[in-house]
Amino acid sequence: MSDLVVKPSCGLKGSLVLPGDKSISHRAVLFAAIADGNTVVTGFLNGEDTLNTARAVQMLGVPIEGLGTGTDRLVVHGKGLDGLSEPAGVLDLGNSGTGMRLLAGLLAGQDFFSVLTGDQYLKKRPMARIVEPLRQMGALIDGRSSGKLAPLAIRGGGRGIRAINYASPVASAQVKSAILLAGLYADGVTSVSEPSKSRDHTERMLRFFGVEVSEEGGRVSLRGRQKLTAKGLLEIPSDVSSAAFFMVAASIVPGSDLTIRNVGVNPTRTGIVDILTAMGADITLLNRREQAGEPVADIRVRHRKLRAVQISGDMIPRAIDEIPVISVAASYAQGRTIIRDAAELRVKESDRIAAMASELRKMGADVTELSDGMDITGRDSLSGALCESHGDHRVAMSVAVAGLAAKGDTIVRDTGWIDTSFPGFERLLNQTAYS
Ligand code: S3P
Image (cartoon, rainbow, N blue to C red; front, side, top):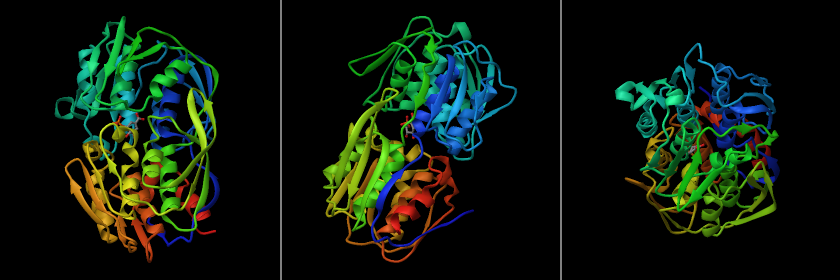
């Protein structure tokens, strides 16, 4: 078990490039696998989560050059829509909800049997949200607790898979993507609606591969049996969810002036920019451009005293993975921040509401748990403490960021989890926070 010792910083400075976007990396290997032709993927995230998805894709008979060598450049030899083959073993997605749920959708459309499993945390996360619609589409799926929990055993519907018109009770890109992936194998039009718009990387990447995807009145639809065509190069930008840790750190540590280059700024993901800006942060997006259908920019952040903000409703899916580090920003902001409508945080890699409230309180923050959020009154300073990661990469990194602006040292225990999404976090923190 590795620990991270965080000393107070006198300001984060310079310019840095972060690892590739996790959501886009999962999709890049999955979609390139069922495309006709080869795809060169650059900026692939070499995190445990996305490596597990790529290994699973290999077990489905798709050669991937470069995988496991540490390079962020992979060559995926696409097998076409009907080219996957039955895996000889169990597909282990480790800690990754995205890997498991998106693969379940893809496998629901196959003509073979497969089993998906994961680590102790993933095996506790809700799977009924994808199992129910995929069963309605004709896939035979079983799992622990009648299919509510992994491991999941999937006998794909093959040519018998049926299109569906599904109203998802949760705003979840994983649910939406699983259904659209299965829908690719059905005759007819599959559509999904959700209570508020979740990240749209699946829609954008399917279009990049030449699939027609329509959106009307909050409903995303596609006609099945459309072929994906490889486009040669697929460039993945850096992950805005990883940038979020540095954006908050630079906002709360006096003396900071930091530029994060080549970050994905898809509007369904940039709640963090909008929330910090509403809190008074000094953030500028520079050099805006587009890569593989995704908006990209450089982000400059300078320290400025933050003020409290109210966060709820449609903003939540746009910032869902950033709420832990936003709770850190709120702990240093002037006034009372209330976060609501975020009950989904309780079923992430850990219960992120309970985890952040408990760790921030150890540092002297004034945080009250709400059933669906947090009530936080900011303080001028927090104190370093001995904190836990709760087996959750984003909790570990959020607590480390809180430590940068605290008085005294903070020790975050069991930080190996950070590698699921952000290998090199500690090195980049040391490079920018103490120079
Ligand atoms: C993701 C969707 C979100 C997010 C997760 C990645 C994705 O989960 O929290 O980190 O890549 O589709 P939900 O779809 O469950 O909200």
